[in-house]
Figure (cartoon, rainbow, N blue to C red):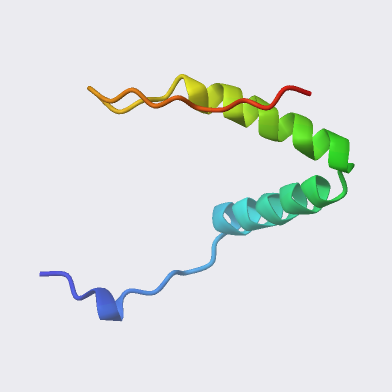
Length: 65
């Protein structure tokens, strides 16, 4: 059986690139204007409106802007 306490992540080029890209995306998003952030939020609300659990109906709110 695998002992997870002995497992460690070994940094590699792929992982470093993923982390660097993630940091850059967060930086880019932080520099957006408030209006742009709200537009993204509304987009996410529209996407979430179509997601439901089987057998359950949930009315999701989408902001009108």
